[in-house]
Amino acid sequence: MRPLNSKTAVKTARPERVIQFGEGNFLRAFVDWIISNMNEKAGFNGSVVVVQPIEKGMIEALDKQDDLYHVNLQGLDKGEVVNSFRLVDVISRTLNPYHDFDAFMVLAEQPEIKFVISNTTEAGITFDASCQLGDAPASAYPAKLTQLLYRRYKHFKGDTAKGLIIFPCELIFLNGHKLKETIYQYIDLWHLEEGFKTWVETSCGIYATLVDRIVPGFPRKEIDAIKAKLDYDDNLVVQGEAFHLWVIEAPASVAEVFPADKAGLNVLFVPSEAPYHARKVTLLNGPHTVLSPVAFLSGINIVRDACCHPVIGQYIRRVMFDELMQTLDLPEAELRQFAEDVLERFNNPFVDHQVTSIMLNSFPKYATRDLPGLKEYLKRKGTLPEGLVLGLAAIMVYYKGGKRADGTDIVPNDAPQIMAMLSKLWQEGDVEKLVKTVLGCTSIWQEDLNAVPGLTARVVYYINRIERAGMLETVKELLQA
Image (cartoon, rainbow, N blue to C red; front, side):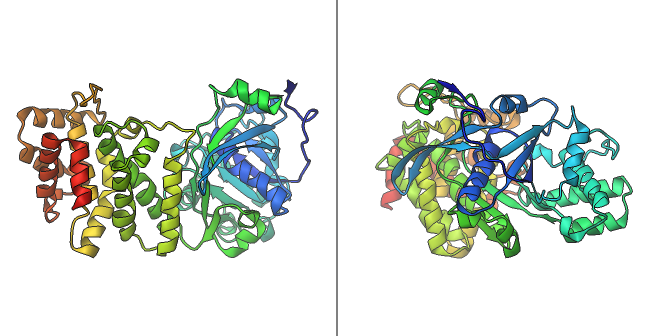
């Protein structure tokens, strides 16, 4: 078996055009994989300089392999099983600004650099007033980026053509807006000149993005077989699902210089990210949240098995297509295609996704993922979406704990105050009081849901029905009705 490096595999030298803050599994299996495809299929001709955003990371492991690694994509694509490998060679080099701050800052002086891409976790885009311009480096990512932008502005004397295009990939709604606001906070904190702020505003593009690809990461269990198949001793293989989506809130001019959409990739340049964010939360996260308790209490443990079940599979489709989809405003054909893609992802034959792993903090998840759809459906249709109501009742029954009919332990997990409240209410045994108390808990819902017409009575009905007949029979009744 060969070592993986630039002597044993082809690594093409390309101009350094992208600075990437982050070296983790997601960026390597998503952004760098996309750039690899752009180089091959759209003539992008660019490489990536990876900057380690925190002092301790994994760039040394990348350097041992000359920054080469394979991406293993697994899943379904239009019903066809995918299990592919791609050698990604787009990373030219890595930098640790904590060890070589000067080399990091010199990146700002490279004229061919055009893009900055980041994934520093949801906590990465924050303002830390302790960061100073003279830090080497500043600790917060937006502060490091401001240091870099200011150096570029000064070096190129405010040249408007030397502005950068910035794509944050952190899982924050309107992440680009948040990042820009934070940069402005540092400009004000450090008393930088107005001309620099104008240059950032008019010459740099800081765009909100939505990223979507499940990346399990390093295939620890299968790595020996994968290495044998590749005939490379690759210790940085990263697995991801076949599906990918990158929505970028940017004008067509950005698509011209970053031609991911022309490489046959699912990358969209749109005027507003908001409807796509709503689509993802509603049609992917929303069904996940309600299918999990319904499936588990029906004796099903794996998301894929729930989708294939003759009864629970119908329930999932009802919630997705007949209820949640009806609350969104994108074109129906586009929504339907996205929903079908979601079902393919749920059916991934390579991933045994435990429904119990989705059940953590179910009430807050329901509040953000399903409640808006429930209320919008009621507003548009004049009736409650019964599948979503059943899902809410199922969460309350799941939080009762105890054992499933087959003897499997039911182990709910939520905030201590929520768990204490549910435990006390279930011990009292008054279902109507339980429902009214939970729906009236404004710390969960930010409102009293007992005011939603008919909701309290329907949740009480479904809990009583589940307790008497079991979950599966309750779902059958719902589908027949």
